[in-house]
Amino acid sequence: MEGPDFLRGQFTRVHEWVFDGGATLPASASPHVVPKPYAAEEPVDPEEAFIASVASCHMLTFLHLASRAKFEVAAYEDEAIGTMTKNEAGVPWVSEIVLHPNITWKDGNEPDAAALEKLHHDAHAYCFIANSVKTAIRVAS
Image (cartoon, rainbow, N blue to C red; front, side, top):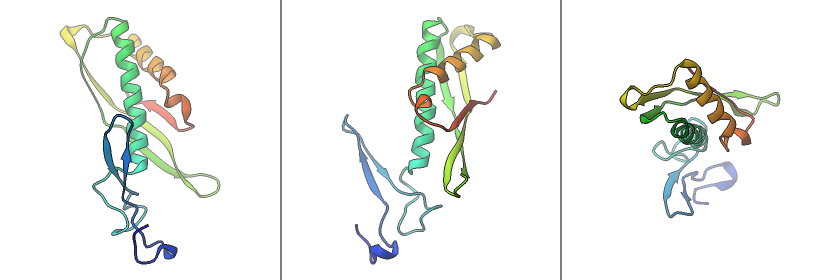
């Protein structure tokens, strides 16, 4: 690892994620956790990626379920927010993710409140990532 003194934690945390489809994404520890110059702000940090993965999985599952229910989505945006807390041992973890989806429906074909709640509930129930983690995940209304 590149840095002046590895054993004192003085090494870069900047690295790349290479995915099987060929995409490459710069990554780093968050500079809120590891000070600069050993971390960088521009790359994605693992905690951000985790929150984005949960939001993406929910969105993709939601869109699939909406299409099957014949509700056409024109646009879907989300500003997911993750909360980190310390566990019983004092180790920080992402304890909660709140999704804030903003959905635009095509041609006024919008589900009523109960159908929308069921779409989000089912999206959570069928999301591979939500089923893989202990983090509390909820949709803000």
